[in-house]
Amino acid sequence: MKIAIVCYPTFGGSGVVATELGLELARRGHQIHFITYRQPVRLATLIPNVHYHEVHVPEYPLFHYQPYELALSSKLVDMVKLYKIELLHVHYAIPHAYAGYMAKKMLKAQGIKIPMVTTLHGTDITLVGNHPFYKPAVSFSINHSDVVTSVSQDLKDETYRLFDIKRDIHVIPNFIEIKKDKVPDVPCKRSQMAGDNERIITHISNFRKVKRIPDVVKVFNEIQKRIPAKLMMVGDGPEREPAEKLCDELGLSDKVLFFGNSNEINEILCFSDLFLLPSETESFGLAALEAMAVGVPVISSNTGGLPEVNRAGYSGYLSNVGDVEDMAQKALSILSDKDKLATFKKNALEVAKEFDIQMIMPMYENIYRKALKQQ
Ligand code: GMT
Image 1 (tube, rainbow, N blue to C red):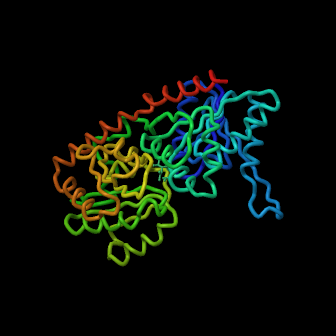
Image 2: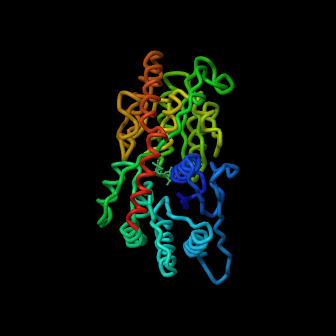
Image 3: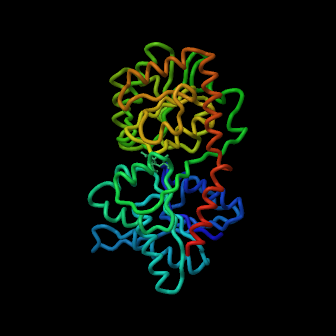
């Protein structure tokens, strides 16, 4: 199949999922055209069957807001015609499903029929999309997609609860590539980061309010009072600086490392003992799955789709949002017991295997066939 993938190219779960999906589809022989405003962070283009087309939005002083949706839908029309693309797969409803719908209409006016698959990722529904200013456009774009998928059952339920949706939503969970070499027997480069007696706790996110970054620091603060530990903070965003200040206030600065955005996620995870994800809401929690795939147990909140990924008492534990004390207790119960830690590490990897890319990919291929048949 010839498929156009539209996504956000920056650090963030939806862009990562879209990129990894496109790369795997290309390995399976499909022609994949990424269409977005910047080269996605995890996209290498020197791969057979992978193409990248940049959307340019010319600056014009009359426009207070530059019309990205317009440029994107025009680019989609041009690329579909030029490369004979058969299907659009847009990730994140705003504004991609909206722009995709316009592209479909423009193409139809020229006698070209093309189906659009929309994948809902989370904040496009729960935070941003639900805003009254966007809601009518989001409902419309979902209802006018040919096939709609969501990354968890919880996100599907939320979409039906928050919007007036008149069509089926197919759950296709996020996925991960399980590679043997991602799970080394000996924790790599660990000695450079912490002493033998120290436990390493890691958090990875885009440091937005929804991630509850102060809770990460507070949970770590409780842990380090009881056992020697270090905290690795990976990613960047508006909550990073306040978190650095909080660490300073709590006297933790020499125990917390802020890495910023990193392309060495697996290298960092492979020396981690525990992953913290205390988010306010999380449609799936790809970062937790990435940790589990390297054998790192997870302490998370019990919100959104997280219970579908992190299994309580097996791959980690889940606590109520904001219950720092409970998270710290549960973290300590794993970290201070060597055997329990080893069991949870093994379990985390076992659960991650349920989300192996090789099992999830056929679900997308079936959805594409279904969308093409509907035309
Ligand atoms: O919150 C983020 O990390 C970014 C956001 C995005 O849209 O890129 O992530 C959302 O999509 C991911 C991929 O499907 C999910 O794993 C995340 O749970 C989801 N984030 C939220 O729901 C807050």
